[in-house]
Image (cartoon, rainbow, N blue to C red; front, side, top):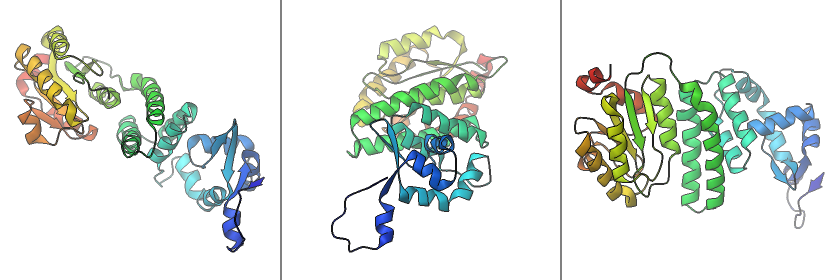
Length: 300
């Protein structure tokens, strides 16, 4: 056990105790659980810990906080009525570079009754949004953001097949980000949510030139029922407008949806040449179901 350095002892003993740093075994002993149980708590993000030179360290204050909320923690792990802060736990694991722990949070959320769409909308999206905001504000380094994105990409890769829906598809949706736009995780999640609703998705990913977007749209043939694009910064708007125009020129009757932080709303979307604005992943079901009957009929 190690105590962090203090100046003259003029504070209460409780303050000093709060800064005692424990090994994970000491934390497990203090909680009255097996070492592997405490390790699982850390991996799930319900017990705060940091890793130094390959060794987990836990502050006494975090052990006390865990103990005071132990009932709620146990209930959340087994699917009780209390709502666990899954997004915050995932964010912590992503920023720690802990891929196994990040997947553990996802598994725990599913075991607690979370639905697949909720994992994306209520857990992953908020976690990734917060990480992006913290990077933009300078709170974390770009290396932290990239590492977190890499882990998130692997998590999405594991979850993706679970969104597949059996039976006849309702048509094909083409997704992608215009030239210069490097953010693609939101599109990947959006694609899975659309697949779950019964459509087939062709995801072009990030940084797609306008001509390639148009070529892919033509390649979808008569099955194409909608095109979706995303831009995260105002600098990408010109490329977004170019991509919309290129697609419109070759498949004029197909609705084009746009979203992302750079798009301000319905009026802005229409001014860019698009037909619909997608405010969030939570809205995608309603947007897809509102496709014109002519397009829906062409897909069946």
